[in-house]
Amino acid sequence: MGNRPGRIEGKVALITGGASGLGKATAELFVREGARVVIADINADAGAAVANALGAAAVFAPLDVTDEASWTNALAFARDSFGELHILVQSAGIALTASVTETSLEDWRRVHAIDLDGVFLGCKHAVPVIADCGGGSIVNISSIAGVIAGHNMAAYNSAKAGVRHLSKSVALHCARKGLNIRCNSVHPTFIDTPILDEHRDRFGADEALRKLGRQVPMGRVGRPMEVAYAILYLASDESSYTTGSELFVDGGIAAM
Image (cartoon, rainbow, N blue to C red; front, side, top):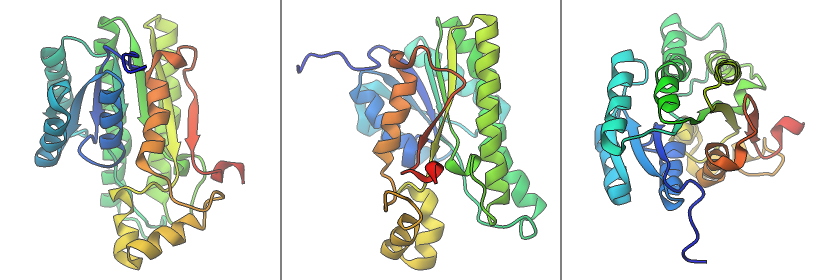
């Protein structure tokens, strides 16, 4: 049993937002399951620390997901470091709690630049690289907020809904071109990561988690590793006939 190959043994993955939250949890799981990982993040200190903790199987690449040149540099670095690229996980993102009338144009554009434009740029530039390496998987982290709207999440709802549909378009493009690349989206609900800091600051850590958990049928906020395992499935060959789909990791919210 101890010599069992990992579920993504020999694969190379680039993970955006890899310095914290879902990206960090996914990087840790991927390395345990046999992959080599590029931790890509705008936070150089935190990203380098995660890569160092994971050892020789991980490297850090600076990445501003809103900048096209930054994307091409990060992808070239991945090839230079490990020779190939098979998996792209797009986890970088920000949240904004504000209704449509409370959202400034500046904030609207910032949320869309990071949460949607960044995913577009990743798909645009990673698809040819992954295709050149024989194919693989793109996993885009959307949100349950990309499926179910909230009165006070105008920009976030819009951006994450865009990620959901963009993922389907990318999946169809890759299938039509015979590129052997699958593209799917993952839709978490509230997960105990830094994206909830706004709620922690407002209510205190424990009360924030209790308040958010009461909105979930399972009665609690999710754990990062619970999402990471869903990402692992979509990244692995276990999901070889799954593309253009969406995987809810939402404690039952979508069933309500």
